[in-house]
Image (cartoon, rainbow, N blue to C red; front, top):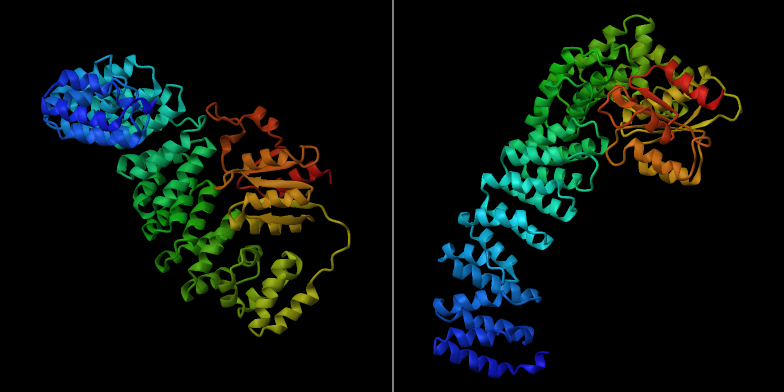
Length: 553
């Protein structure tokens, strides 16, 4: 079609129209503009731009009546329109309302680029009347640039329009407009049921003002696992800037939220969190999971000032908490702490046995080395390593003792070690992102007569499941890269619930259907092929009872 128009003749005629200031002939000539080659269209636009305003302005607008498909042409025309409307903003509304203009999107974008507030009523009307997705997206973008508070609710309506593309544009616009209203509307749109939920959370994380940080905290408190985990990931990525808002969330009344908050503070590793976490521990929370999470956080937040308070955790009634406290102590070990622990094990009793076992089972190497010269500690360590500890743990500490020249203690351990039978033991896979919980599983399962295989990352567990079927799978619910529910779903593609029973471990008491707001009721759990739900903290008897029942021992 372009062959029907001689470009040189077109340019020659264009120059004549401009010279004679003949707008009528110029508009008649422009009707052949779509037939020109792309590079020549750019040249024509340049020639028109050099004309006086009274000729160039209507000529450029007239071009909008034609379908323009080449991006380079539209881009050039857009910049020329921005330049012309800069000093004639009062004219744009008339053109926006002109039904003959096919490229109205360019004008909408110009109104946004120049932040022409007089165009708000017209743009809002287009938003109501228009059905073309591209036009609606352009209006949403323009309203974001103009950034008038009266448009926030109108833009937010497109979060529920039923079109993912427009929802994404609305999210971008609200983030750009900012402020408490925009952020609250974005937060309300996160339901855990749409593809764009993660996009909203990611965009909130980009804003990083106080409103956005507070909303991320609200999403951290969500009972929807994917939403909560995404918010956690983003808060950790933001880092120290998020810490004050995260610390404030320690005041909330929901135990699960406090636990997640402690996890975030530990992962960020900002020392300003030490004081509030220590203060929380000083109040001795009734929920053992909170105490566990607090000690776990303090392990990642080493501080000699807070260390003296850690020793009390070794006498916690729950073993998981004692393990976490021992790990935190090991990172903060000092002569003062060592003296405190020695006083706690000054005589051989059940409490002393538990403390020594905890130090060993937690892998607290530095603490072990400080205390091994204590006669009581040494005697109790020999008994635990020989009779109760996992073989890997025994090997680790005997190597440590040998390297330190304590061959006499190693010999005592070897003499006292029970010889196990050759009976084939059942294998249990345990998956948890907490290294401390993995240590606990390893030790408990061994003592119960099972072969434990532990995984910190669900992806690694899935790889192992491709090549080996254990007798049972234990998985935590809340893990960052892949939660326990997703792990079970993927596992079920290979093994049904009869071939591989699954126990789900969680800190969420309402997971098992006690809350009407929770998505995971008993029916859903059964459909997912989860045989048992065990809430942390669990004792040995509870875990053993579930294992024996499912494996019919």
